[in-house]
Image 1 (cartoon, rainbow, N blue to C red):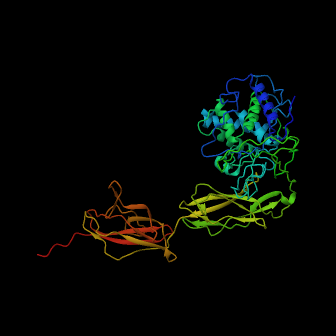
Image 2: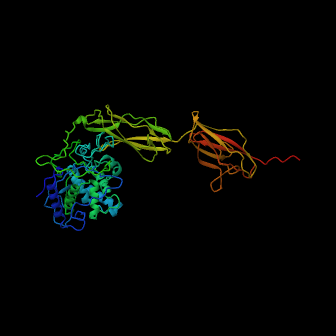
Image 3: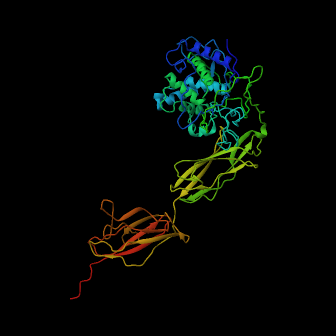
Length: 556
């Protein structure tokens, strides 16, 4: 008979015993790797190590679904897992969710084949963490209709994890909360987040993104998940709790024996979710792939007291927000033309506005600004992405955008953090540094004998609107006389790195003080007066005379 699936915290020895029996029953007909890796004495499973640079993704919270799979397994051992859309919602996996798990498995097979990640492990964790994204309540892109948030991790019954994202993902600027169908803590999502559905975004509320991120986390290091001990270590790295491992293992074996696809939104929803789409403390798990900042490991929660409730409090969901608090759109709030000279700051700052579904301003909405395209332009502090909250008038202004040295166009996008709403594109352009004047810094005569080197070098200074013009591109060319000068093939010349003769130099730039010293000039055997033309980006030009003549004969 099928077990009711609801959120239950660890209840002590009884739950542990039932879990052990269920795992044993499910594993009985499986091959190697189907049973928990023992510590060698028949006791608790061996606790594996988490990735070296992260703690437990979930913050080792005891808050997760502990109910076990139905005792009547989907079908007999060895049969296909690609079963028709039949059977109970309890044993079925919503279509988009199942597709996300299988897509993640394929992606890892292509990029980390040695890990041998089975999609059924992702399905087991997804079941324990969020009831398969609330029974598959996702849109066509795989994004949950509203965020799935775990309880506030404030140390009261759960781990203490101070805010790491300024509320960008979880809406809480004080403490972190686990986010999405695979329940990532924000700081870990920043490290492990993936774009699993190829839409250019990494969204913890998207089942494709979250499943791929969870897969990469589980495969960290040199784990081979076909080996029982490595699989146990991977699960324990997600949440360091032996009960968590047993529960995930039982669902893993259940799904390995067979499952079937059900339509999105028709999967089993834990009773305490009640089909709700609220975006506040969703009784979704607090177990989320995020390192535990303290690096400590929390012990399993204590058994409930005889005759009393659990020793761990259960958060109370808040009501579904009304239209006045439901985000409808993020739009351009009047940003003007975005242009800057290379190396300079954009004079216009990017501004966005959040509105509710009724068209009113919406405060405290997390908006992420992202620089995209082939550019080295960055926000203050060298950041390509910044996340800020809207003010009382619904608007938010991005930091000053600083142009790099790459010229051309690029795009900045403003999007509601963690939402599937369309992003707002802002087109920006970086133009080359310019000069409107260039002159020699001295008036020495530049002369050389045929076949000799010029004794003095050419030094020029560029300015723009009477100010120093640094980093301006300059082209130097030996030119012919006439109304339409061309490159002169006779007279003075430069040498390239191989010592070959060149009469046009490109790629020259003025220094921080606006000056440029040209390479050495050489004379060929042709005597006469020649012209060297220097032209800057912006059109400023100076023509310098060079004289090649034999030295005067000494007096008799």
